[in-house]
Amino acid sequence: MVYIQFQKPFVTHGFGFTPKIKYTFVVLDRIRPYAEFAGGPFWTDLADKIPEESSRFNFVLTAGFGVSYFLTYQAALNVGYRFQHISNGGTRYPNLGLNASLPFGGFSFFF
Image (cartoon, rainbow, N blue to C red; front, side):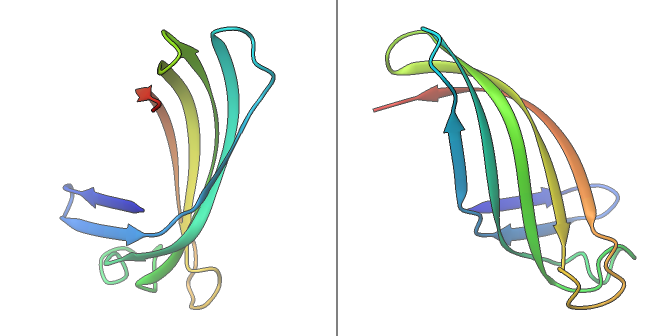
């Protein structure tokens, strides 16, 4: 599930379902690099607010890579980068789409 809310220059929302595939490369003890891909339908109320989006129904595609550093068998710190593209897939015009670069950091707990 994806939920996005922007505050400026106006309040807008997005909601979608994006299944993700994550591939973890050869394990190097505590360091584990990975690549991930996700995509799916995405609804947003941006259509009436910006010229890049002409439809409320869109698709979101995400690709990224990162590294997990395992502190213990069940806990890891994560850093990485994701590229995200939102567009209506050519179902309506104009279809310029929105692109975002998203560096991230986080913590994972496995059980």
